[in-house]
Image (cartoon, rainbow, N blue to C red; front, top):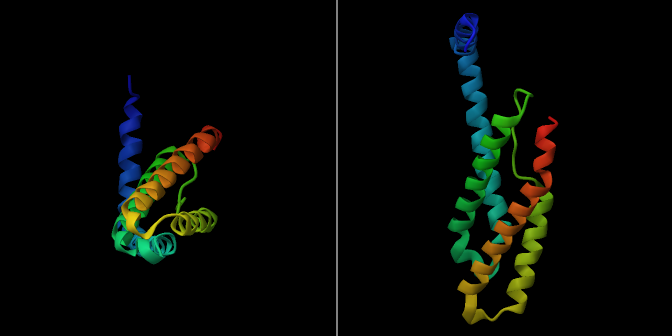
Length: 141
């Protein structure tokens, strides 16, 4: 059963967080962060889906944005540190772009769709494996 003082604590927290001055600054910071995240996702997907994979750049942008949103929501729901802003990191993007260029060099030009699907499967599998490896670290933060 909930403690009666819990509702007063929640009410005080909401009043403090949604004060007009604090809300405006938080909202502005969120807009700047979202804009930078979108720009970063577009540039990362241009690195990964370069060359003959460029017809699939819009799918790449959507894939990176959705994965960034899922990661941000997961970290925001699990962290005990306020103000954490997760984002895409450079090393995985560089590795994925090398993998994509290697796959493109070894595949035929006629089979672009299969090459694209292979790259998507590689991105999904590496993302899931990375999540499994780093999942225990969320229990200690």
